[in-house]
Image 1 (tube, rainbow, N blue to C red):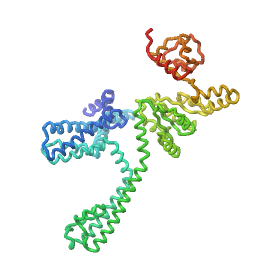
Image 2 (spheres, helix red, strand yellow):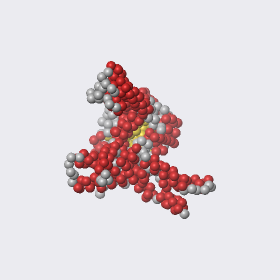
Image 3 (cartoon, helix red, strand yellow):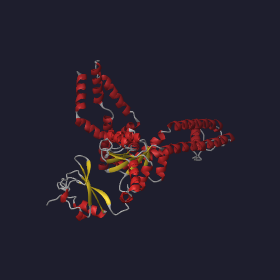
Image 4 (cartoon, helix red, strand yellow):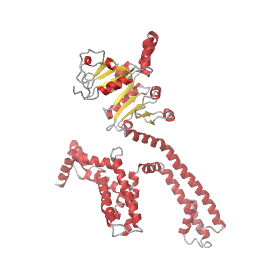
Length: 516
């Protein structure tokens, strides 16, 4: 009967979208570094930790008001306790394990036991309880018990909670963790040298040196000496003791050099990774940005044209040499493979408007990048480079929104330069911005004054503009010199040519709602 109630309750939680959403929100606040509001929660917790430590230090020599004591005991400790309970709750799912085990048993037509998933869940909860971070969280709660004054010292464990909320400290610990084998080896070597030197100095100096009365004194001297601190409270008096001192000093210098080299190498290996992570974090704060995949000739020309002055962007390139060149040239570039799912998923696709440029020199890579981006979010706008019309069709099938054919465009421009030089000069001047006349798009949003008007009703000449054509939002096709009786609807895009000042004025004039 008990097992049946547990199973029924698990299925109830599994089917409750409200319960899942609430748990997801708390999980994001506590564990999801990409969650937009987590930084505010972390800042709040850091403030509470610092306040509680300041209260502890002040209380040593000064009496504190009762309201401050109540604030520390009831409010701060209650928040830390609630945080501990919530982390315990979101660590794993009770209902998911039971539902999964039940469905598997039903599918395989085997007996269902509720105790197996319960044991699995409890094992996971126990793993959380004995984890270092959970132990620190628990010890940070103990100072609230005032009858035992000694427990007040556990307030210092609240400082260790900063490791959870301060990303820089957390990254420092992660870097050291990558060299834990080397550091543990050096720690054992340090223990061996200190033990050997301490025992040796104890044997040689115990009867002649009044400052060495026990093996503890000898070990203390050895540790102080090898660390190059040298307080001077214990000094060897015999020739043998001084020889040991010289050896341990040399060993100490070598140990410090080894530890320094290990830490420096660890940071050197992780430095690029930390920089790339920081670039991704900064770009994810933007509401709109561009991801450029590939740092080849086309990307260099695009960037050097100063086209992206008003846009936030990041370049993804998997070739280490090209990444090094891009960094030297001052561009925001990271070394990753854009065709991998976990690379594009790092970016904030849910809260930002993203345009992805697949500009690698390989058509197949551009298609893979497109498939990867579209599998993460259909809202990512993809513009891809293709070598010919055959690859253009494949790119379209992969989900590319716009395909650029640089080879075809270059060939056509070469043909114009040979056969129609006047047209070539005109087109080239407009494309590179060497003429006052510019091409621009005018989008008809919902409240635009252009919506509902026919083309013949718009006096382009009065605004010193040349109307070239428009893209029909309903059919997603571009029409050159369309019939003047066509109505303009929301979503259509007009293509006009003229001076920048005329285009900007026309846009401002038709941006609002018409009340005529």
